[in-house]
Image 1 (cartoon, one colour):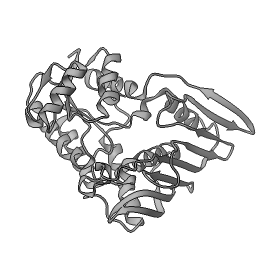
Image 2: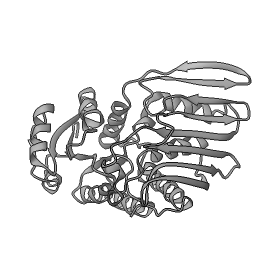
Image 3: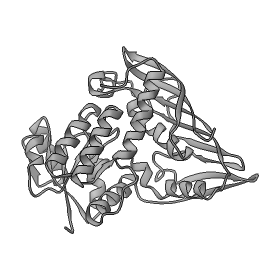
Image 4: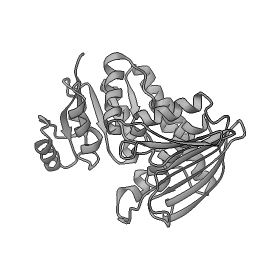
Length: 326
C-alpha cells in the first residue's frame, strides 16, 4: 500500500481542520469517502471538499473495500462503538479524543486493536508537533532537573449549553472535552501516571461538569494541578508549565503550538525563549498516522495511552463526587 484512503464518519465541524486540510498537505493520505446521519449533510460536505464517494450510512462506509482507514469525529459517547466496528471491518482508526467514554471501554478497544494488528490512534494532535517533542527532549535530558510540579489548563468559553459536549448521554462534560487535553499534557510533562489527590467540579446540569479543577501526586513525589473549563471565570487558557529543581519550562500554547511556536526555559537562573516552528498540529498528526499504517512507525497516542488517560479522567470524576461517563 502506498496510498492511505480514509473514510470520514460524520460531517462534523472539526473535519475541515482535523482531516480535510491535513490531507491536502500529506500526499500519501486521501479523504476518499464520507457518511453522515443526515445524507444531505454528507453530500454537501463531499461537494464542498471534493470527496468522491458519499455512503448512505456509517456501516456501508465501513464495508467499503476501497477504504483503508476511518476518521471518527463523532460525539464522545460514540467513539468506542464505532472504533470497535471499524476494527471489526478491517479498518485502521484515527479517532478524535477522548477515544472512549471511560477506562473500561479503552481497555476493550486496546484488546481489539491488539487482536487485529490494526493502527488505532487517538487524535491528541498537539502531541505530534515538534515544539512538544522538543520540550519532551529537554525533560528527558534533565534540563531543569527532577520535576517537582506540573500545572496545565484547557479552558475555553462554550455558552451554547445545548451543545452535545454538555450531553451526559453522549459522554459530555468539561473533563471529557477540555480536561482530557489538560490531563494528557500533565501526564506527559510529569513523566508518569499521577494519582488524583482532590477534584472539584462546577456543574452545568446533574452529572455534567462545565468546569473542573484537580490536584495530583506522582509516584516520585512531584505534584500537579489542572484546570478544565467550558464555562467558568477562567475563560481562555491553553498553557502548561513544569517546574524542576534547576528551573522551569512554560508553554503558553501547548494545544496549538503552530499558532504560537515558543516556550520559555529557565535553567539555573538563566531565561531563554526558544522558537520551534512547524506545520499545523493536525498535519503532523495525519503524517504520523500515515507513517504508522504505511510503514509501521509506532504512534505516540496508541490505545494503551488512552487507557492511562481515561483512568485518570475516571478518577477525577470520582474524586469530585461524580460518576465516570457510562
